[in-house]
Image 1 (cartoon, rainbow, N blue to C red):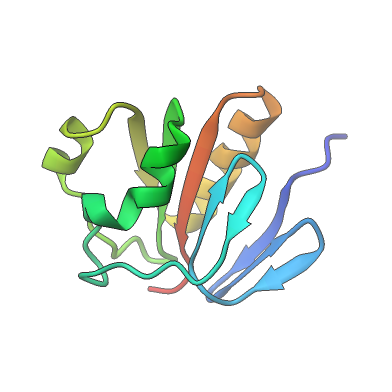
Image 2: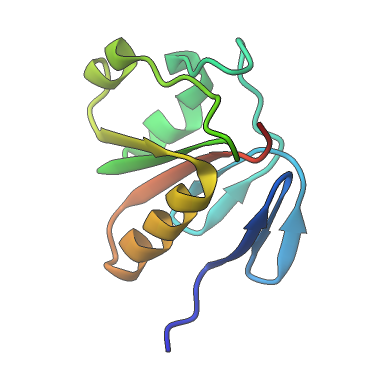
Length: 114
């Protein structure tokens, strides 16, 4: 059985490597950047991804919230040098763990509520 890096998620809380977080966050591989804020709240903008762009992943997995309410505009996806896949946060976490197992250079951006 494989140990998952992101161990648990429920509305408003994520558990990673034994630590619980209650604010949105970014993960660069296994580096956690807490308290991720977006300029327009529920719309993802390029400027919200500064640290991710500097990291230069091959893939960014976005958790759009428990109900999937965060918007990831199509023009944003075309404007970056890496793939973006977005899902409701629970599914995004499952896919992030799977990609991390495959040793891909990935980043995650997770909205934990709505």
